[in-house]
Length: 144
Image 1: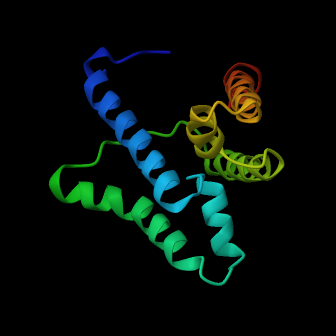
Image 2: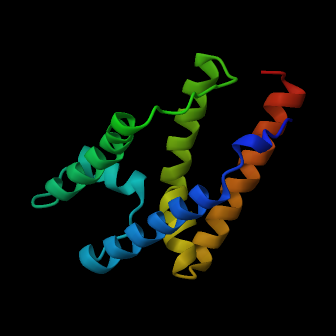
């Protein structure tokens, strides 16, 4: 593993974290809901009367924000060290995990932990341990 210290940007990371915290707090206070992406997307796939507009706007913001950023600054180069098959399997496993865990990393890790939810603490710990184990297995055992 190599750390590129020239790309270490603590101030922009801090600003991003503060913006995420502010946005999730505002969402909870103004909408009375948790900003968990899997739940919001799941609600779009199982429509409920009067619930579609805010969900669609939220998802449009997730997609539109990087596009708007790209207007003012070039997007960073993304390098993914995995083949397409591994990415598809990983995405499917994440989707299954969010169903079994009753939420995703944004719902449990950002919103749940900030509410001091023990269930979210257990779910986030499970996400992290599973992620560490899979990266170790993929990189060192299976050489993917």
